[in-house]
Image (cartoon, rainbow, N blue to C red; front, side):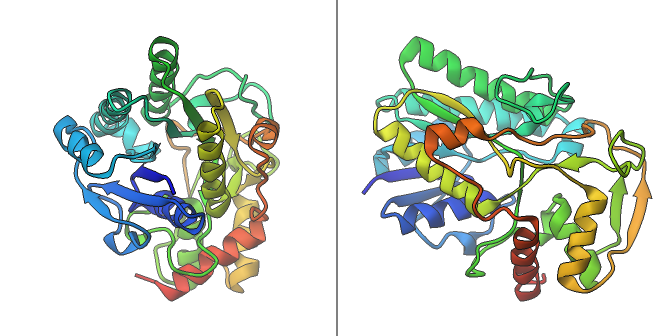
Length: 325
């Protein structure tokens, strides 16, 4: 059994990662300040509540648990807010990530699986996006995640610290058992917002941008089930523990869906119309992004087995109806 520190382990993706780790015989330790995570989602191992930028606190966590690996998911992840107020994004995603990397280096080069993002690509010049595509983020969020990736590459070259960087596209859905899902009060994700609008549990769905160069004028994204993302973390851990070298991998479904196409699926699943309010484009939002996932398939024997859009929306809707608050 491996002990794995999961920063952000009380969060949406982090809690699914902890669940997957535990189901495979590992012991996840959720490290979270609970600023956006849910304490009731920490069910598969202990919770260490604290701030990852606090080096002394991190040192104590390492001393208490003697981890075999780290999965670093703690982050400030609101793209829009990162543009209007970048300070907390840089604090969490640059200072926080560097503190975690330093702790890993000083504890036997503890291997790291790093939660990155498709936002590092910005407005991709060609689709689908591969790991070799240019990185040119258009938001502070994407920029700070790219800085974290670069730091890991430098630490590997200088100190031999191994890592797997996972560039998520749009995480969505909920655990099929209904135990955990996206926190509604703080979500910035399109799928839960659309479902809540359809069910009358939230405000009208704000459609940001109707004049993009896509088939229907709305932004195109690649939605990948959170269960598939958690599975990729487990496979990345196995890769590192088997002595595999550092990797950078896209995690997506491999296809793009426009916002209007997404709303049609939500309406089909819920049986209700989604009330929509058009708005201008948001700063920092690229027109279209979807992934080439061949490298993850080859390196980790991974596939987005649960990422059919209907399945994603159905699991998210079941969670929201069970836990509407």
